[in-house]
Image (cartoon, rainbow over all chains, first blue to last red; front, side):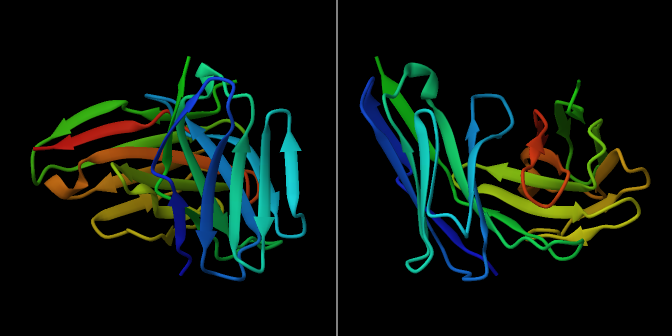
Length: 116
Length: 111
């Protein structure tokens, strides 16, 4: 099955600096790559996702890049703010147009701390 | 709009006791999932459902059972709780098998 590795496990940055979190996946059939943000005591919330037919996607201060050949994808947060402090999870899955087998495999998470 | 609601939020069980966790979604989603989250392990899929009346095993299904009798509800059962099942449990749902919306979690402690 799919295996997703996420690095680093913890990351501290100064407010205003950029943060980068990297993930690798093992199943070349994976075609959907979401990123989730989890604040303390809450459930994960989707912040951005990318599909295998796209190399990069951006949403304000957040961007995700995908390298299918190398089987890795990264989350980039620019101009970090204290409210960006949370645990971030990457995930990978194979999606099908109809009902069928489905597995969303998560990385182990990165605890991001933004220091004011 | 409530989204995904989990009941209960906290529970302490004794080894060998049974319990059921309830997940309810009001978004008319076809897909529902149960994950467990342990420190340093990320989120691991226990069971999932692709529609009413269907269930399937995920990565870590042993010791758990599920039922999806109604489209909006997905129940996770522990027949005989073990300390290894101490965890935070998250339910999620999605319209397609892509973006998943998560509940607030159930913190379960088995002593």
